[in-house]
Image (cartoon, helix red, strand yellow):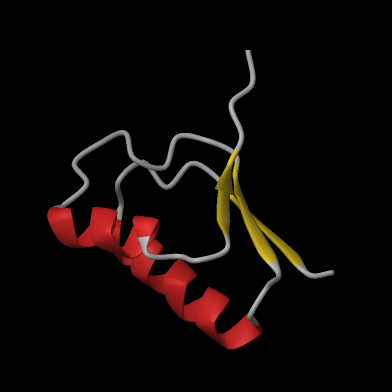
Length: 62
């Protein structure tokens, strides 16, 4: 199983686009969000990219 983890994007659209390109290339089985991805000045396109990932799983701790 291939697992990708992401964290601390803080609404950086350029970083999110690069991440999506990498995920499309590497095709992980699951993507785990470790937090702080949507805080900050995330643009609508960034949110659409983020939520369109079919293997994304959100885990809430604490």
